[in-house]
Image (cartoon, rainbow, N blue to C red; front, side):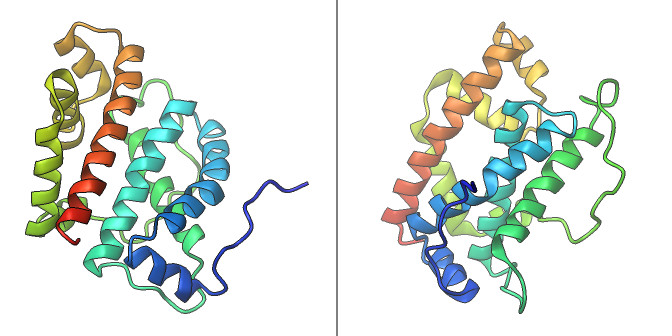
Amino acid sequence: MSTRPLPIYSTELEFYTALTRRDERAYQFLYADVFPSFRYWVLSNSGSEMDAEDSFQKGLLNFLLNVETGKYQLQAEARITTVVFEYCKRVWQTELKSARFRTKATLPDAIDTADTADVVKDLERMDVVEAVRKSLDQLKGECRKLMEWFYMDDLSLRDIAERLGMKESSVKSKRYDCAEKLKAFYLKTATQQGL
């Protein structure tokens, strides 16, 4: 029996419109519909549960920023859940190609070469940058450092673990907790700014 959530939108356009309005139900549906199959795909492609969560969060953020900035426009015949899966898949494929995984992971046979989301350009939008800055300002101590090092300085979890004097597995857990806090601060800040 399928455990996929029932669609709450009658058309892709209705779903896309809900995403542009930051409808929390749309985000929840994306997570419930896409994450289980994406997690299975990552686990089948040299990844762990934590790798799946990290890649999913980054891919979903890339997609949502592209929706928000208008860089992603709904195309006829496109299924949003399929597009989000592809965004997340590219994040994991990039991770597999990075030096962190070269010695212990094999690349998938086929790599999708479609346009890659450019988060840096999206973040240049001043209102989004301001919301992110305000959100980061609300994080304290190690959480703030960890987020800046991981997302802005693109340091590996191993490098961050060395800087913080922690085990890499502990840094992975802490990064996830801190990302959840940052996401909550961002959603609150973005709502206050009317983004």
